Every structure is written in C-alpha cells, then in structure tokens.
Image (cartoon, rainbow, N blue to C red; front, side, top):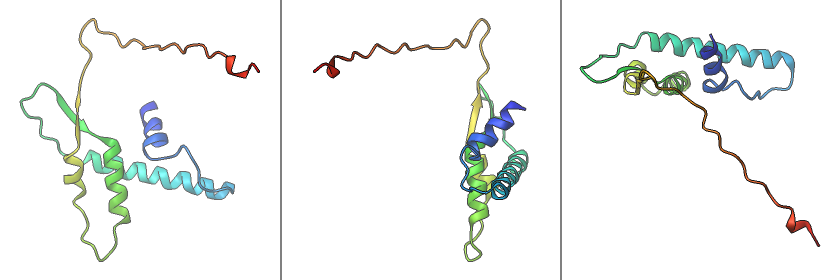
Amino acid sequence: METSFRALKYTVGLTNFHAKKQAFIIQEIFARMIMYNFAEMMTSHVVISQMDKRHSYQVNFTVAVHVCRYFLRSRDDEPPPDVEALIRNNILPIRPLRPGQKNTRKIRYKSVVSFVYRVA
C-alpha cells in the first residue's frame, strides 16, 4: 500500500501541481492515477525470463512509467513503440537481505558553521 503511494507521488510525478484551481488539481490527480494504473497494467503483462542467475528480477517501475508516457504521447504518423519489449529491457535484481544483516541508518553529522565572517 505504501509502495503504491510512493510510486504515485514520486515516480508518476504527483509532488507538484501545475494548476491553481481546485477542479483542475483534482483533474491532475485523476490523470496521474490513470497513468499509474496503465503503467501497473503494462508491467503486470511483461514476462521476465528468470535465468539461472544469482538473483531473481523485477521490472524497473520508473522506467516503465516513462515508457508508457512516451507511448501515450506518440503521434499517429509515428509507429507505436513496443512497450512490453522496452519495459522488459529494463529490469532490476531483487536482492534479499542476508541473515544477520541490518539496514542501519547512516547518520552524517553536520559541522558547526561559525559566524566569524559577520564580525566587523
């Protein structure tokens, strides 16, 4: 559930609105949700052949959204791109955590900024 909202917000581009009126903002939200559903539908139909490799593979959803956007923006005089083949070419390995491995936060402390340059 949270992954879907993250993909909808960042991958599809729902962080910034281009409209000012409330009706147009709602229209933008629905347009992005339709785009997300179209990309999800296209990625669910892509068959990834799992070869004898170390990891299993999944579709790169960010690239899939860009390919679907390119497909929807293509003109009538151009031949339509093969969306499934383009999505199939961009896959990512699924790397599970090893036993005993933890994802710890890497905290970087900021150094203090002196205000010596303000002294006149």
